[in-house]
Image 1: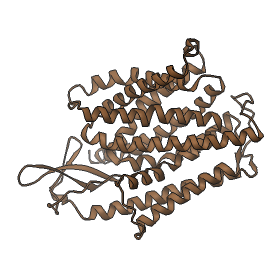
Image 2: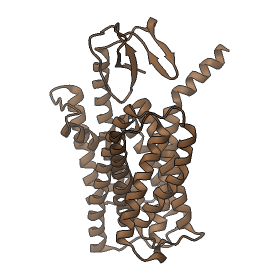
Image 3: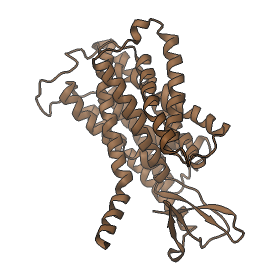
Image 4: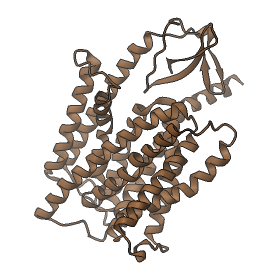
Amino acid sequence: MAIMRKICNVIHGLKPVLLMVAVQTTFAGVNVLYKLVANDGMKLPILVAYRFLFSTAFIAPLALFVERKKRPKLTWMVLLQSFGCGLFGGALSQNLYVKALSLTSATFVSSINNLIPAITFVLAVCFRMERLGWKTSPGAAKIMGTLLGVGGAMLLTFYKGVDLNLWKINVDLLHGQHGGNGHNSSNNMGLGFILAIGSCISYSMWLIIQANMVKTYPCPYSVTALTSIMGAVQATMFGLCTNRNWSDWKLGWNVRLLTVAYSGMLASGLICMFITLCVQMRGPLFVSAFNPLMLVIVAIAGSLLLNERLHLGSVLGAILIILGLYIVLWGKSKELKKVAQLCPVKDSSIEIKNGLIIGEPECSSFGIVGDGELKHSSVQDDNDEPRRIVITS
C-alpha cells in the first residue's frame, strides 16, 4: 500500500507536466493542419469560426454534466472575463495566428510564440501586476530574458543564412506550393512577423484574464465552455462580415473538416480545458514554459511533412528566444521563492481536503498571492474569516 501510495503521489505530481506535453503536441498538429488547409484555399476567418463552433458543441455539454453540482453562480464579472477570454484567447489571437501562418511557415510562427512569457511580463509591468525590479537579480534576469527573446525574434525574421539539410525525405503535403519568392516573400515575412507578435500579445492577455477568472470561478470545464461560446460568437460574426459567400462555408469529407474538427474538439475544447487546469494548479508562467516543446515538434513535422527548409538564422533565433524564455522563468521563480519565504506554513498543521491545502500560517498578519510554482490555499484565522495564502509545492 505504501508503494502504491508513493506511485500515485508521483503520478499526481507529474499531472501538470503530462497535461502540458499533451497540449503542446496537439498544438503542433494544429500548426501542420492549419498550413495544409490554408494551402487548400479555405478562408481563414471561416476556419477560426468553425473551430470555435466545434469546440462549443464538444465542451459545453461536457461542462453542463460534469460540473452541474459544483458550479458557482454566474456573475456579470465572470461573463465579462469570459468575453475577454473569448476575444483575446479565441477570435482575435487565432485570426492573427492563422494569417501569420499562411504568410510564413509553421516553424517560424512557433518560434515567435516563445515570446509569450516575455510579452506577458511586459504587460504585467504595464498593468502594475509585476514590479520591474531591475536592481535585483530576478528583475535583471527578466529584463535580460525579454531582450534576448526580442533579439532572437529579429534574427529569426531578418536573417536566413545557409540551409540546414538534416534529412532527405521527399514527403511534401503542400505539393510544392510554399508561397512566393523574392520581394513578395520578404513582404510576407514582415507582415507575418507583425501578425504573429499581435497573436502573442493577445494570447498573453488571455493568460492574464484567465488567471484572474479561475480564482473566482474555479470550474475548468465551464471556463473553457464560456470561452468557446464567446469565441464562437465573435469569430462567426467576423467571418460573416468578411465572407458572405455561402459556398465558402461548406465543409466536405476532406482536410478542411479534419482541421476544424481536430482544432475545435481537441485544441479549443479538451486541450484548452487542460490549460485551464494547469493555470489553476501552477499559474500562467508554468504554462508558458512548455512553448519551446511545440517549436521542436513543429520544426521536425514541418521538415518531414511540409518540406519546410530550416535555415541557420531560424535555428539561431529560436535558440536565443528559448534562452530568453528560460531566463525570464528563472528570474520569476527566484522572485516567487523570496515571496514565499515571507509566509511559510507549518507542516504539522497542513491538511489536504478535496485537493485544497488547509493550514495555519506562521505569519498570520497578511496573505500573499503569486503564481508560477505556487499554489493558492485557503486558511481561516481566529475569527473564522477565510483568507488566502500561498505556499510552495
